[in-house]
Image (tube, rainbow, N blue to C red; front, side, top):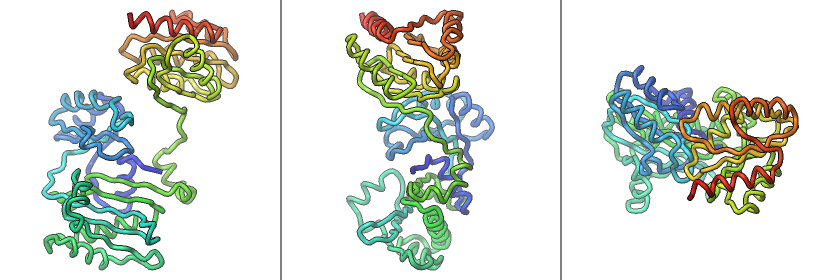
Length: 369
């Protein structure tokens, strides 16, 4: 399991590694409020699980709350290597004197952990590995014995850093290995490890724990509020978002769209027993996907109640600032109550899946003309 940077840093801090002051923002308003509270320039960092976000423009800087609002508006909902940015880490901007690279992973060929470090860190580390591989120091750790602080200091010496930095860098190497070992990690990485006037700080954090070991770490899973995804979401190449309460129903809805001459833009299974808030989140998600022109919501109420679906639809439409073209097939448990809620909100619906799919395609075609 890969951890977002903000969660990885919580674990690093818990184990003694110094991090920057930061808070998570899910909206431009929150980003502005956090920046106002900090009262200093900030870094605005997209929280994604893919690498290379810096080069992809996923990290911005702001000197004022207004600038933070603007940058957050651009980043939220954007894509970095096909991964949508849903939240941001707002940190006090660091006064970085020098950057280093620290990484620990599994060398499967040698069947033991390997520590890799360099006196040159930052976004160009991959290029450095290709052009000057000798600048990356590698050290294999015997997993059957303890890794000692003096070994970490010896690694720092091999990095060729100034003697006054050996103790500080050695401490971070040792602490990072404790994280790696304690949490059954596949990868624990700091890039860059930043030298600042306040000392060595993990300016970034990467942590990936072996899935088979997660049962041993229920405490951090609960502490960091890890939850199973509320729904399955896949983006496609069309322009009609298809949502349904169940994989089979969603796939059937996609088939109906194609039979009517349309092309699905998403597969989104909200699952059985979906709540009002889940419906709202699912709709809000597809509405942020740029290719979507029309939303086709296909619900056959069973455990999922039609009135909850209707309430979620109304809330999602009220919350968005864009024009929403939505076609709803709504029937099943509490269908009369749900249909009345839609009627009162002026949102049309169908009880026939075929009619609803055909109408969605017709609306989509009219928007193209």
